[in-house]
Length: 146
Image (cartoon, rainbow, N blue to C red; front, top):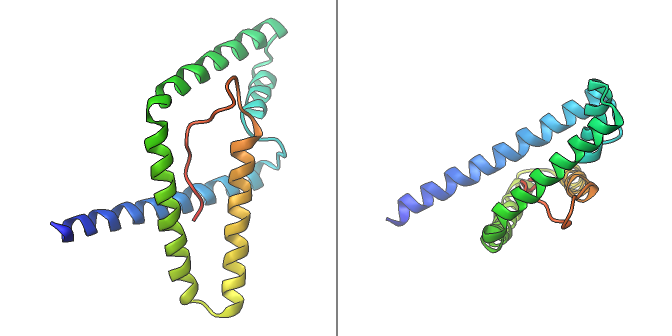
């Protein structure tokens, strides 16, 4: 029984790391390809308004609908918040452990570069999470960097 739990944990860890790496890479590729400095909900709304050539009335209505959607999604997450927070803490422990194991495989120069890459990924994630919050100031949980 413990062996199957171990395999399940390893599978989840692998999926978590692969998903984080893929998300990080995709975000970098998109950002560098577009050259846009703005990101987050406000930037998306502005880009949508610009590309669709929304009138001010349409833009106000779209903004209201997006705010309503955000409140509804946050209400869905609210009962799960403590479980998600606990999972995030455990995911951070797994991430830190994996980072330490990877560092042991690297030479000192590579270790410094890896630490810088991780710090940059965490800064980017913090910017994305803290950049735009709608009513309530909460966000659904997102992936942690490696």
